Amino acid sequence: MMNILLEELPHQEQALAAILASFTGIDHAQADHNHYANPLIKGRYDDKANIDVKMETGTGKTYVYTRLMYELHQKYGLFKFVLVVPTPAIKEGARNFITSDYARQHFSQFYENTRMEFCTINAGDFKVKSGRKNFPAQLLSFTDASRRDSHTIQVLLINAQMLNSASM
Image: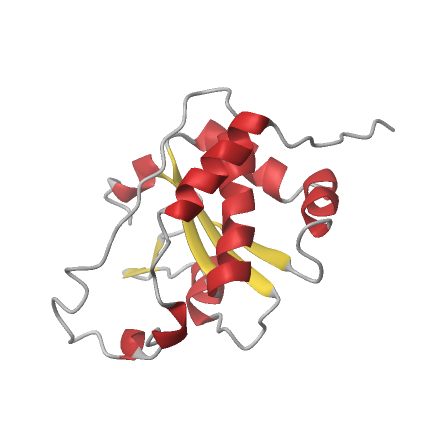
C-alpha cells in the first residue's frame, strides 16, 4: 500500500497567512450566535466584510481551503463551511482529498481532536416525490448541526452548476 504524505509549501502558507490576516480586528468574542434563529432580521449584516479566495489551478487550493477551515475553527470558533466548486469532477476530487486518511492524519498534527463531518449534495438529491421536492438528508444534517460538539467542523460541498439548476 502506498502512503501519501502532505507537505506544507511556502506559497500555500503565504496564502493561508494572507487570508487569516484579513480577519484581523474581528471581535469573535462578541459574536451573536443567536441571530440565525430569526430570519426576519433584514440588513443587519450589510456592513459586514465578505471574503472571496481565488487561486490558480495547480497551486494547492484544496489544501489551503481545507487548512483554512481548521484555522478558522480553531481561532474563531467557525464550524460550518459551504464549499462551492465549479464542476462535479472538481467536487469529487475535493471530497476525495478532504475525506482521505492521509489528509486526516496530516491535519491532526496541527489540530488535535478536531474532525470534519462532510456532506455532499449531488444532482438528483432534490427529486420530486409525490408532487413534493425532497429535502436531502445530508442537507438536513448540515443545517441541524450545532456548535455543541466543539471539536467538529461541518462541511457542505456542492458544485456551482447546481445553484443554477431548476431542480434545486
